[in-house]
Image (cartoon, rainbow, N blue to C red; front, side, top):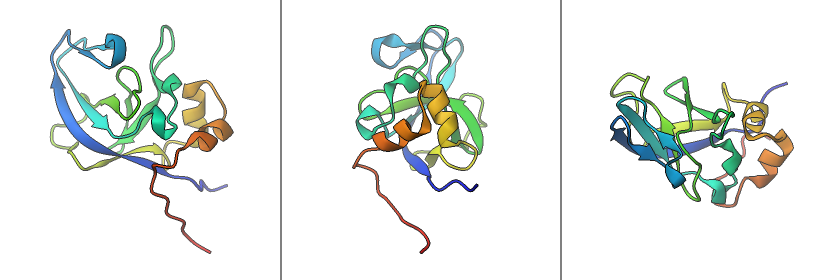
Length: 137
């Protein structure tokens, strides 16, 4: 079967984070080293569930940026999420680029597993703020 859904979010900012600094609600992510985070304009108000965030004993969901999987840093907020892009080469992540949340290399079932749910719930939560493009007949 071929994937039929693709979800991308625009990167609106790339920030440096010093070792020991925190990111997200409740300081849920603390940088263990000097880091870089990409801020993506997608949040739980868009239907990207908060359960994608890291929790005690549960790793965060991942997105694809510049062809590589990168983990969400901290909690998914209402309109934004931060993603750790420290391991990507400098200059490969820029404001205006897109992150793949669902699509090539990141199936809806991958996302659902990271959120602790099923693909159907992920798809039915996707909100009205997304631009939809229908391709084909």
